[in-house]
Length: 467
Image (cartoon, rainbow, N blue to C red; front, side, top):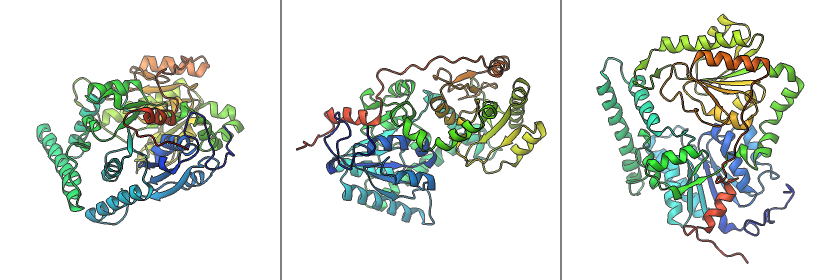
């Protein structure tokens, strides 16, 4: 496909003949790092076939520059900042502004398709108003790695133990958390909508703060999932199978080349310049969470035990991979990395702690082995697609709740005991570590435009004729 095709010219015989304004797509993205790692790939595919308007939270300068490049995004008509989570406005004023923005976007662009992940006020209004105007709506789920029951339990436990005074008994903590979540739901999905003259969100979204997956039954017309296990788990939750679009991650599909040319280009250049050095660098994806829960009993794993386990992981790596540099990439939400730096400095000069805000994709590209410490990080899933040939290890040595989420996920090695961890690191050191070749799911759409084409053939989607 030529990147020089002029705006409006046919980009694929499978799709509509030319960009027709009646097929405008509204595309909302909330979390900037999720947009960089995944959603921008879908936007790239869409903007080469349809006119699209991007509604976004604050983006970094590099991403903004890429989006303005018409060779990559010929169909991108406009970028509109939303600011759902920022600003100095009061709650009611911000809610009123978000409703007005959603209404203006739908009325001005009259979209045929609305893509908006999440269930917060702005995207909820965007879907509701879009449906009223006849748009087909798409949201996204996950990846949740098929662990719906465990995720519910984890969020309840984490909130109860991490956000409530420790002097209260557990039943009182959980009751307090539940009451607070119901109050938040009542405020955001009943009181605030009424304040702008809108009916409450009675059926969908339903209790997003409690992570009840049943909310997806009525929120959007279709949902994108990238893992077969997620789809099957959510079908068991009662969501109709026909609502799912099983779509390949952008790194598996046609937008991989785009991502390599943009975000991964500088990292690849660095790796090429110091190839041997980069091969002996191990990346550890480090969580911000300092507590855990036993998988079987839900008992709290003391912070001291978690700390000791993580120090032990570093010692094992240092002993099994002698001379390798260790890059610890803290989660972006970690605000104080000094204790982590002190721990690394005490263990070895080979350990360095990176800036939490750095792009994890760069470190994935520049490392010979990637290790994730429980609880899980979606960065491991990204790594398994970005560099499928590299050893990618998910550690769960304490057998924590949610610690086994990557078990059975293609391209990621799940490890739950120290002996196996040492054995695998030995093969990594010797260069004899082997991975099974990836298997592409046959029923998966190769890209999001293929999924949209499927939608346009369905009875839900009204297709306008082209002259």
